[in-house]
Image 1 (cartoon, one colour):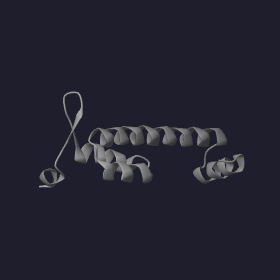
Image 2: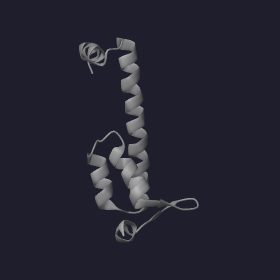
Image 3: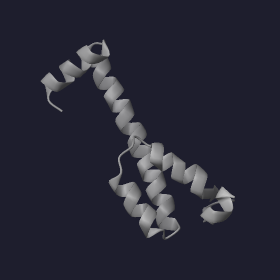
Length: 89
């Protein structure tokens, strides 16, 4: 991101350049955390299709959270795979 782009973003958001950079940094860290967590769980399940989808799709963590909380079930120490058909019924 160039300095001019950041300044234009700050103007659109109605904040200072420093606050715009802070907001962009927080969104980036948020997205990276959920991306890492969902890819980790998909790899533990050996779920190649979901791993590929999660790796390519960039949805600021929304798809990643949906995978974690709707399709993967928390176990004692590790997440266990859940049959999607049973989960949706």
